Length: 74
Picture 1 (cartoon, rainbow, N blue to C red):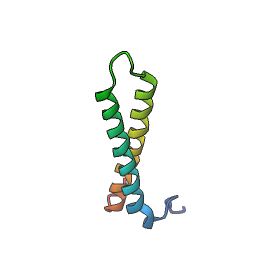
Picture 2: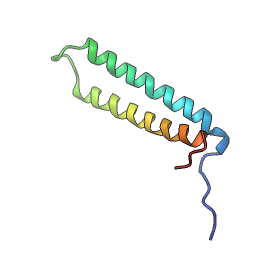
Picture 3: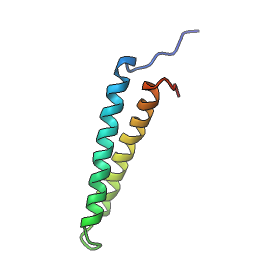
Picture 4: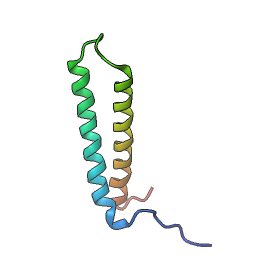
């Protein structure tokens, strides 16, 4: 039986954590600013869903890499 290895080097975990969380927070801020400044009639549902989904993916991977970088292997 062989050991399972990570497809990403362990040394990259902190950098990936910072990068993905930062991108996710910027997209989340962009989403909130768009929601606060657009009116109901001028808003685009597709843009809202796309921005929220991409932010969610980045924050999800960011959380994963934060846990991995701190030694909590999930």
